[in-house]
Image 1: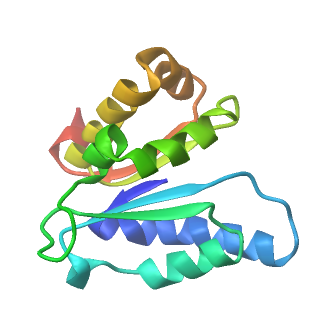
Image 2: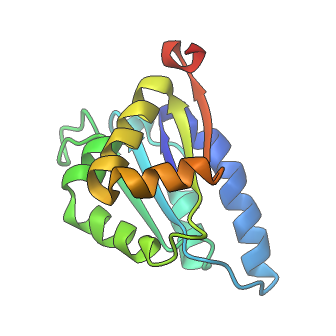
Length: 147
């Protein structure tokens, strides 16, 4: 799951659903949440998402800040391309690529960058299989969403 800015709100619903399943003892597949915010003050729901990781609803939560003065500056797409920790987590998901679903919430520009970064890291053939299999889900806004 990938979300940036206000895109964290729709992802929150998915995480809450997984949390409800986990609390009932239902075994869940791996789930990585990659979040992007401008800085720490704009980071919404991060503590809630980290608590969901502790309950088994998420495998990991990675937060990227594009304009932070306290942390390395990176966006979610550059995290996929360049961050070794993010790549390690994505490789674990690729072992289950037949079942891999990708959820992207946020701006159309961010979404396009994430898909390009996935193609760069996973390969265009793998990403095309995810798209053709109906396993890429987007809740996006902005100009590119109209195309």
